[in-house]
Length: 116
Image (cartoon, rainbow, N blue to C red; front, side, top):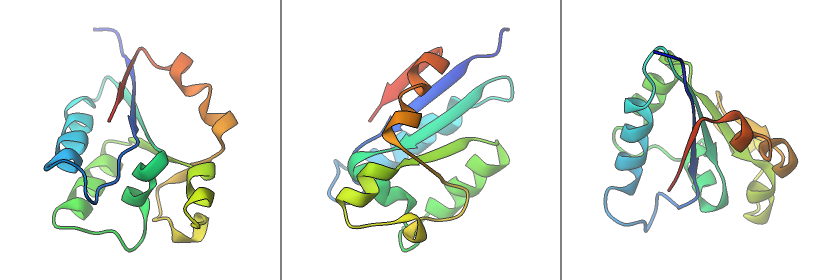
């Protein structure tokens, strides 16, 4: 089977989202990342709150650890951080802060894209 590039864009806040949005989004990302596939997750809009150092609801650290083991790339949109009064210093390790311009090339990289 040919390797596929998968892009997941998470734009909704983990707080006040429809029940289970966080779990569904992350589990789907995990399920979409078998060894033969390359996965990138972009957190933009209110989705940047997933990447905050202070954000750690039950099970979130375990999901993050699994994503790291699977070598999933996790990116945070810089402009979304700034609009919310946040900076790179507020973000957990293993997240790469990217500009809107840098992220603009991601859809052309992907064979499949999902947005939440």
